[in-house]
Amino acid sequence: MSTISIVDCDVHQPSPTREQLAEYLDEPYRTEVAKHGTRRIASGIRGEDGGNRRDLDARRLRDPHYYREALLDRYGHRFALLSGATASIAGMPDPDYVNAMCKALNDFYMAHWLPVDPRFHLGLKIALQDPAGAVREIERLAGAPQVAAVCFFATANRIPFGDRYYWPIYEACERHNLPIHIHPSTGSTLANAAMTPAGHATTYLESHVCMPQFYMAQLASMVLNGIFEKFPRLRVAAVEGGVAWLPHLLWRMDAEFKALRQQAPFLKMMPSEYVKRNVRLTTQPVEEPPKPEQLGQIFDMIGADQILMYASDFPHWDFDEPTRLPRSLGETTLRRILHDNACEFFNLA
Image (cartoon, rainbow, N blue to C red):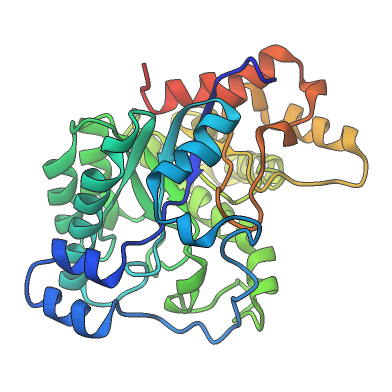
């Protein structure tokens, strides 16, 4: 496996300090952040057990050179997508504030991280609270060197992703050939009506375990509302939500569609075919069934050689090294998961 170059689809660079962020903000938010820091949504659950690995040098995690040494050079990365954090934007009710924050975050990372190493690529932050503002930000930075994706926060949304509310964003992403990188926003789940379909979670543990439910709902919303029929070149990555739920969702969507297709007359293919064509999943956190061979069965069910891309989630506590993937997959499949699929998805040369 060491001979396979790595494309990492989920690397979390830290948020700027209060002082760094204020430098890139316009007024009135420059003064606000300099004085009070960024706004926060309190979840009501204890999340201290999440966050970064405790074996890493916390003082150096703000240094992009440290990421180059501890991740890119150590594991043989060819590319790494910087997905950042969403705590300062996900679920915030003020669209003007979120637009300003996204612009400042994008400008900061483009100035301080991307020049450090050409292997760094950036996922743009946009304000899902304001599709028009999100489109302006995409138009402003689409085509900039090392910009590879548009980031969606997946777990602090009151409007599901299949709604036509998001059509302007999808149109801009498709026009500029920028894929969508959907990532959890665990710390902001209180912005939802509830943290899980059953209601509010009582702990971070419960919330984290239920994360795949968000992805099932969002993907079903996009497919069954015809997003990939209307925007056939739109590409979507479901990141950090696991993979074992996908066979169930594909089977259920196809079975229900056969009986209820009059409710989605715009679909020209089976729901599962849109997923295979337009959607990719990432490996982290890969499921750990009791018997190792069962993971291989899951990979076979989802067509892992075509739909799965590697993600490390560095430097978080559940970080996965490339060696977490079972070697029983074979060299060809490993190469596709670790490198080829992501190169195709993100248009990396």
